[in-house]
Structure formats: structure tokens, C-alpha cells
Length: 257
Ligand code: 13P
Image 1 (cartoon, rainbow, N blue to C red):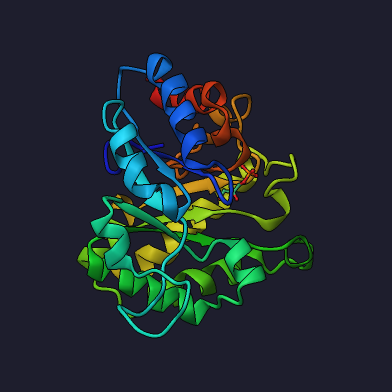
Image 2 (image 1 turned 60 degrees about the vertical axis):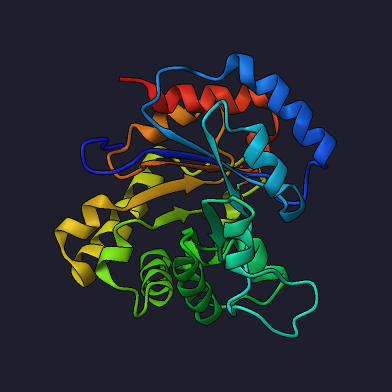
């Protein structure tokens, strides 16, 4: 973390979990234990049906709400899809874009990720852009090239003053939902490389403002070590964000002096 130049953001990604009533229960449970000292921003990215209620439910405890994806266009005949403007009007501040599960199961590509990033920014949402390599790619030794390519594609034609406010989440595919976390060194190394890519494209001023998260089996036990890396500015948390007590422990790790 480096709080001097950029925000630390702990974000939960609920994926396809939690109905509205379960969301209410979660809010009731987290409210009394939510840390008061606030160094870090806290976000919950929830299923689209819960966004509007979640904005209201989590307002008191200063948790911002995000969506888990959006469509790249602003309207049209795309049954089942939702636009960035719809998400914004529902009260969300963030939207996850290009999560590996979207890339894997819904054919999202670096090209569509870029279009969605533009759509999110246009609507006034902060995109949390996910990048990450598979185990095969890591073993082949192409992690850094791949991540650089993903970051460059995602940010193509995005103005520097907009890039300053985006969030990038480094989520190695082999660490998602597996209980196998990247070591703090691995996470730190890739997050640093992401910042270098941004610096080369947009300059030092922009690069140092961008929040870069780590995601992949981050939990109450390993959060502190991961967040101690200078270029790891927060986490994108799946499983541990479904349990209020675990999520709070991660927030506490990010709140430490
Ligand atoms: P887990 O924390 O469950 O590994 O999920 C990470 C993730 O995919 C967050 O977007």
C-alpha cells in the first residue's frame, strides 16, 4: 500500500451469491463490527438485483456498492444485459470488468473489456479491471508479457485523467477460489509490473495514482502480508467477502498504520 499517492480499496466480489434477504442479514451482521478508523475504502460488488437495496443497506457503514459486469453498449436489443448507466442510476459507484469468470464462461475478450471500460467511465462508474494469467501461462514464463498486453488493451484510448481513477485487480487464475494464494512477492512483483506499464504509457503522475489490487484466495490470514507490498493497494475478495467477520478482518489489515 502507499496511501500517500492512492486509495487503498478492499472490494468484495459476491459473484452469484446472496439473495436480497441474505444481503440484509449480511448488512445486519457487519454493521456492529465494521472498523471505525477509515484509511481504506470498502466496496461490495453484488448481483445486479441487489444493487439498489445494497446502496441503502450499507450506506451507514460507508460501504460503496459495485456491479459485477456491464454491457459495452448504452442501449439495445440485448436480452438479459444491463448497461453502465442503469448500474449508475441504481446507485452503484464501481463495476468489475473482465473478471476471469466472465472471460472464461461468457467469451469476454481484451477487446470487449476495453469497450466496457469506456462504457463504465462514460456512465461515471469506476471500473475495477481484472487481469491475470493461468497456471500454464505462468509456467511458460509469459506472465509479465500477458499482463502488460491485458492492461494495454483494457486501457486503449482511455484519457490519462480517467486512467488515474481506475482500479486494476491482478487476479492469477490459479489462485481464484482454490485456496492457493500467490505469495506476497509474486503479487507484489506483478502489481509493480502493472504500474510500470501504466507509467510507460501515461507517465509517473498517473501511474502512482492508480489503485492496484490483488485477488485470489485473499483472506483474513494472508491479507496483511499481501497488503504490505508497496504496489498492492487493496484486494478483490471472493469467498472471504461472503462472511462479515472475515471481510472485516481484511479491512482491518488494510487499516493498519
Ligand atoms: P476468491 O477470493 O474466492 O479466491 O475469489 C477471488 C475473486 O475472483 C475475486 O474477484
